[in-house]
Image (cartoon, rainbow over all chains, first blue to last red; front, side, top):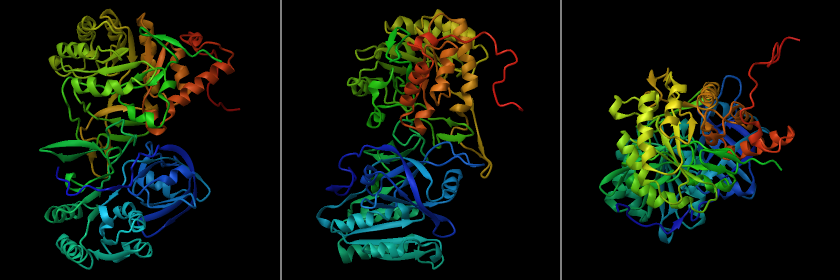
Length: 280
Length: 313
């Protein structure tokens, strides 16, 4: 085993049975030039989703946009009382463009919650969250989840430019100490981020590191976790067809014992032990 | 109450709807009730452990998908010990799909999966035969006959031969599979295809070429199923692009005894159950008591002067 510590609190103690349901779009608006935020009203059981899990979205086929498959999307915000889920998504291909065209009041077919979510270290130890780009959407719900269980949370958010940093205020409101680094300011080099992690470890006695959104950040987190014998998890992305573990489309390589194995991002993930992942 | 049961390749099925191999696994039981299905069909296994093809393994195209998964496999021993028992809890018969590189390896694997709990063996002879320059066994009649005879000698369980659409001799291949001892034919596997991402000028699949499935293939595979029905006496199981009960009815009309639903399950996990419900409703609305009554009832010619889509009024 290369895992440094065994988590005691899993976000997914028992797999929630996924269901297919129609969600109603509540709002769907641009956050910046690249990202949109969609909130949907969902049946109560769908709000049993935990951070790191995803929903498989059947984006509407309209006009020239004919996405065939569902699109996996990690949940950005879970609000059980309001029976509301939110998705923060980058508008890139056929599926997300079709999604971006949806209006409030339209229905959106979804399957979920799916996959394995994050687990937290023992003893309410402080954690650090590293996110860049699409990784931000995946990491955001971990902050209130960890805070509500007594963990101090520091978030290091990375982006190309300060304009592209998202959710800084939301994360602060959720109780995280937020540090930002950008390419434009020259503060996002992995060496700088590694130094920040070491400093945080020294100051807070971190119990866990979580990363999503960048291969370089993942490798940096792995180096730090290995050096400090720190528990860590990474949330991976991969194209999916079925989302349920049947098709073996979404496999990624992992270190296991002395060899390399394939695991399904949809079923064994999307959250994996940090040190076993080989590429983000 | 419509009687949906059918006789199919040595088995009596509660209804004619089952999964296509490779689009189904025990994980789906989290979401749908397996006991409502006509049969359960496992993903193809091979004698040896296989990792599968490089990613990307799947791409979407108009009206369908391409896949080059490459049959990742746990190998026979682990499959028999760990996977077959997972299905013991379900009432629908278990069909195990197998494949191998040579006729002898195929027969050996066939023997190994002839175990309690397995109701029939689907032999995926659409895969490359290493002794025939990598051509799929079912591309040609003589290689089909040869491998089927070896498989027939290896088991007493019903053998369902899964044919490839990538041949110009589908009626002859079908007849050879029957002559070699098949109890039923599954028509068909995916159609060899490719697509290109023009932004990157790269193939969309890691393996460049892959198999096309989904609604785009239905007219082609339906034609092949029709040809097979006319050239053999054993049941034909239609498999290609079935998304709805209406699609399944087309296959039944041309003479298929049952159908397999594959790609549709990737879009809606309950697609097979919707097809079953739709078949029942179709029969009920038509006043038909047994679904078997509609099998092979296609009229011999199109409606004279008939109009099958909206015409100018």
